Amino acid sequence: MNDRCVSRRRFIKTSAAVAAASTVPAIAADEKKKEQDAKSLVPTRRLGKTEVDVSMLSMGASGGATARQLNTAKEVGIRYLDTADCYGNGQHEKDLGEWLKTQKREEWFVVSKDHPKTPAQWIEMLDARLKNMQSDYIDLYFIHMLGDREYQGHGSETWPVDKEWQKAAERIKKSGKAKFVGFSTHARDIDARCALLETAAKKESWVEAIMVATNPNLVKENARFNKALDACYKANVGLISMKECKIGRSNDQVKKFLPKFEAMGLTPYAAILSAIWTDERFASICSAMDNVKKIRENAETAKNFKPFTKEQMSACLDLINAYDHTFCCACTGKCREAGNTTADLNSIARYLTYYEEMGEHAHARELFAALPKAERQLDGIDTRAAHRACTCHLDFSRIIKAAKEKLA
Image (cartoon, rainbow, N blue to C red; front, side, top):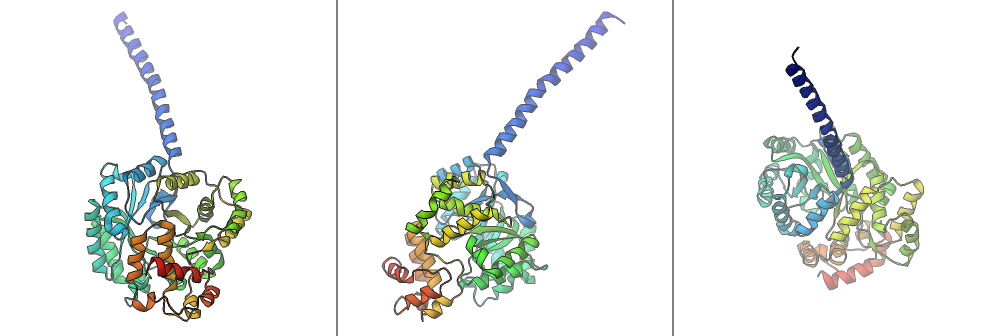
């Protein structure tokens, strides 16, 4: 064998060894970067039938969205964005769509909603949503606020198992304009909300995900609601929580509980988020975070989340009960009956919460003005009797007085 061949072989072997050795640091660096990126993201959970792992914290809204807020959401690791046709009269969708043009769309799970009354409308409205967002598709498309007043008389309680709505759902998904479908529900009557969840859990249901108004006390105290959540979870319907932090005003009683949670590094709202996340049935919490501070704080809570013990959960429930409630998540309608009034006390309280707690003055007034005349009648109400009958014991004397000043 000549020296030239030996030298060539040695050169090839040596070069291969050097190349292999040089790739080891590169691979290690790549793996380290992936690990760091994963740590910077908000943790995820599987969203039921969608089989998509979504951020445990969703960037909710009601008005417009600023690039600063969305950039902060990205920075802190949120990858789930929620919007709707009615948020800021469509401005939120537009803002979100403009911002998403600067992003890798596939990295984001985007939800929008609309208010159809027929299957055909639902299909048509999706085109309007996409046009507003300047997008080809969204990930999840909801019928918004199913069970609320606007759907009365349309048979909406059976929509989750209705064949025509199922055909519409299949057509939407086949078009590629929305990957998954479902509904959101605030349903002012808790029994109506429970009935919708129960129907959505049936075998013949087309529903893949539901965003539902809840809070830890409602889950604990309302057996039917808890069972309905169970049914959806067992049917693999993805569940998203909302309205959990719309609890009310702080007072001296609330302050007594603060040291317990401060010792855990939690604010009262962070404690409520942790209580919801402790319930494994919920894949995500949709939180209307209207400023950078809230976004950062909530994302940090998600990243540091540890399931509550029984003692911690009990303390959180006591904390919630201590608040002067301004919003009732478990209305039975008995307050209205006891108050001897036609006024929609639950909705009025909710709109006042939007005005006082969220600063949405114009939106709150618009919602109030849209109520039928009899349901926005604020005179002649037995507010004390309504307070006693209310599941959340709302202070209707204060609420009605404030509604006259701020909403009427």
